[in-house]
Each structure stands twice: as C-alpha cells, then as structure tokens.
Image 1 (cartoon, one colour):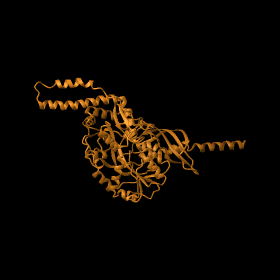
Image 2 (cartoon, one colour):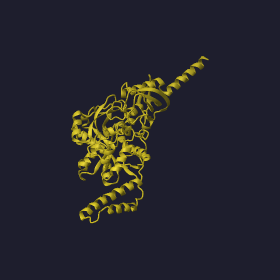
Image 3 (cartoon, helix red, strand yellow):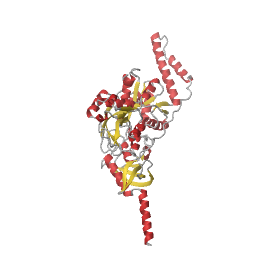
Image 4 (cartoon, one colour):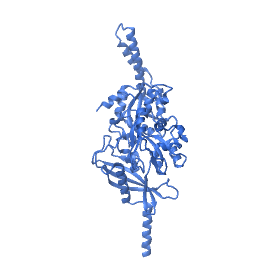
Length: 492
C-alpha cells in the first residue's frame, strides 16, 4: 500500500514537472513584466488562465524549455493611450506578454480609460533548472505571409468622359478669345486626366507600394487594405524592396500611394542623397505620418561593444541595398564620426539574415530602421540575448538639424526581452505618400477613413497601425501635406 502511494506521488511530481511552472509562478511573472513595462499604476492582472504548453523547438541543445500559453484579462488602473509615440504603449504590452497583434483586444484608438478591461492571448518561455522553472523570454510571433500582388484589370473605356468634355466646352461663352480658350483647354486636359484616373481607381483600386515580404510595411499595407475595403476604398498592396524603391515607383506612376520614411521623402523632394541624379520630386505629397520608426543598433548581449564608437573595426550590417533604412544607417554612423571605411566589413543583409549572422558569430552588429517591437528581434531573443546601443546626444542633435524628418526618440523599457531601461536613439516617421495627381477629394476620403475610430489595426495584424492618430499625423513631416489630407485632419 505504501509503495503504491509513493509511486503515485512520484508520478504526480513528474507530471507537474513536465507541465512547467505552476499558476502562481506564471501570474507573478506576468505581473512583474507589466510593472517593468508600465510601472505599478497603469495595469493590473485581473485574471489568468493557463491554456497549455509545448516544448520549445528552438531550445539550445541539452536544455529543456517549455512554451506556456495563457489567456489573461488586464484592468486599466488609470487613463492610458496605448497608441502613444512617447510612452510605453501597445508595442511594450504585446512584447511583455509574448502576444501577437491579433492576440490583443480592448485597445481603444482614442485611448483607454480607468476600469477598461483588456484581453490578451500570451505566451512565455520557461527553462528548467535545478531550482525549478525560470522564465526566459516571451515567445515571439511569426510574420504573416506577404501580401499578394494583384494585377490591374483592363483599362476603363473613355466613353464616360465624352459627356463631361462636351459640357465643359458648352460653358465657354460665345466669342471667347484665344487666351480664354487656351485656359479652357488646359483645364479640360487636367480634368480629363483627373476623371480618368479616378474612374480607373474606382474600378481597379489604388496600387499601394508596401515593402519586403513579411516586413512591417507589407503587414501594414495588408492591414490597411483589409480595413479600407468595407469602407469602399480598394487598396492593392504590392511587395517591394522598401521605402526607397517605393518613392521611385510613385514617381514613375507605377503606384498611386506608397509607404516610406520621413527623412527619405524629404531627400526625394530636395533631389539630394540617392535622388541627386533624378532631381527634385516637387510633386511629392504626404497624406499622413503613421508611426515612429526608431533606429535600432543591435549587438549580442555579451558583446564588449557598448556604444557606437565601439563599432570601429567591427563587422557591421547596414541593410539591404536600395533600402531607405540603409541610407539612414549610414547617416547615423557618420553623425558619430564613423565612415564605412572605418569598419572591418559591411554587409547588405535583411534583418532576419543579420540576426542569424550575429547569433552565429559572423557579424558584430546590425543597424535597422524599424517600428518597435520588431517581431524578428523578439523572435531572435529566444535563441540569444540582444542589446540595443544608445546613440550619443550630440549625434542625435546633429541628425535632427542636418536630416529633416528625423527626431529624438527612445525605445521604451521592456520593448524587447531583457531591456530594463529606455534606450535613446533617433526615429523617422513612416509616411503614407502620394503625389499631386491624387485629387483633393480622394486624398480627403482616404485620410478620413485611415483615422476612423472603428479601425481595429491589431485584429488586422498590424501592431504599428495601432499607433495611428490624428494628433501625430503631421509629426516628423518635412514635406508638403496634400490639401485633401489637410482638410481631413482639420475635421473634428
């Protein structure tokens, strides 16, 4: 009898061990992460239910790790705008809980009030040690598939325009002179192009230059398309090489709207930097500033490099050729007195490739302009500790002055695993851009719907989309705002 009891107790102990941490341990860890990210007076854990576990396939050899899944209800203890650019927000919340954008609900575009309840489907990774289970990092989430490119259909026939042209000609009073008719002809030409463009876009949609497959721009473009469709706006997201490529496509007329960085848009307007050969893009217009994209300078957690000066003589990734991020990265190094010739090696990898190279010891650092939290960085933190390098205050001020479209920023504490303090850096704004060919009416409608309070960006799969607000819609702008966008933003 005693032997049977001992066997039963042993079986229970083994089962408990295999299940990972108990309920109390999990609750304590979540509460600590919320406190680290937001302080003690913003959020409290109202309820947590464990939903299962799975072995961590990315665990180092010989180490036992479990991914613990849970549902949680959080109570807002004081008014909080989780879409704020200047304080911990939805990015920090999602990162702390190991959630994906679709795993959060209850975030309000206009800000949350005391007493509101938020729901989160989260996950944490625990490592088994001799003294029990120890939390490692929140689990990252995988990016969704890249948006599909939809080819435009057959062009709209022009018969619908004939009546409008005839009406305009009949407006000319009898005996109208040559100069007057020249004005009418000029206005008719503009109107013809405008009408044809709007009819075509009504039928075929607005081609939207997004970004690289599974990147933040691509994800935002896809979310934008899904949210605008029920509102009568057909956006067609295209996979591109990034912000620099997007500006070139917009200038060629290949797309109607595009995403790019605020500093890169200003360079396009002035015809400088990568746009020197083609000259100023005077017709470029901003529709809105969407969300901040801070500069990330990343090294391994155990790296001896602690500031940008330490990058001299090191192997550094600058980003993909032709990307807006790469151009900004070079400018950041220059502001710290570092040229590419001062580096032992430069590479042109995308962020995922660069993080893999850092993990494997083939690279010392990478620079990337990207909205926080970047899911690639979060996911990489499961396999290794990463650390953000701070930018020097003097360099930040220099960049703000010499590179319009940039502004001082911080990567808030707890944005990434093991990040206990805010990290000073610079940021640019992700802009939605068009050119002057987009009519005022179209621009007004697009911007008005973009900032509609019923847009659920998290449910649509974009963390960064949750940071859209009229209050920040002109932040970081160094180029002209489209007149239609201005009208929409000035509406209450």
